[in-house]
Length: 287
Ligand code: AMP
Image (cartoon, rainbow, N blue to C red):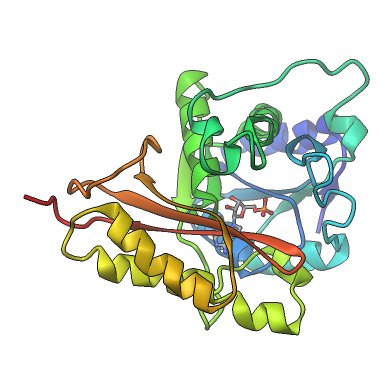
């Protein structure tokens, strides 16, 4: 598997591919690939002639005291898995290649970046500014026809869609469904942090979302659905950092189901891992 570490090297390969009329798909990741990432690579390989997978643990999206240093990394394994899933090229720059001395620009997507995980008391809007900035750079470096992201990170997907629309990036954004373990736990590189007891508690996060979905089936107040989710979490000994119902498109708070898609979103610390998950539901509008 070809691994490029510089923008110049990457551009050379991609210029050649474009000259041959090949379409390019981009799957940005922080590596330590799992089935969630691989499903994106497979989708990209179906749509595009050449799939570029980026592996970059982006320091700009980690806050002080977060897990940047200990974030799991295994490039050799990632390269093998990406190739099997249909990737044609890996872009794995080091930090200095992405953020050279003097780097001073960032992209901030107002509003969407300030709620849920972006609440200043949580990861904060800087997290999403770190994400938006690195994705903007990757889109400019690769120049893909299509870029693929997971619904698992629903807020990140909303931020990227907004940025791409607002800054006129010439790329199609595809958001793909969350891939889960058989017991419902959303796949995540951070699941590697879970000890045995934490691993058996963690599926309660998805069970809680399912309970909320069931409670929401007839519409009504979102608080009723969230209460059903909260009691599943309490039973599993999980204290959510947040558990909220928001408009799936603009992330504004929703108090009563209104017939439009609603994002039920949760973040919770389970042992050493901070996990997030979400479900989009479309309960009927209440009378
Ligand atoms: P990450 O390496 O965690 O930054 O994730 C890279 C991409 O994979 C992002 O677009 C994520 O939303 C997506 N992703 C991560 N986990 C999953 C999952 N379980 N199912 C689908 N996509 C995922």
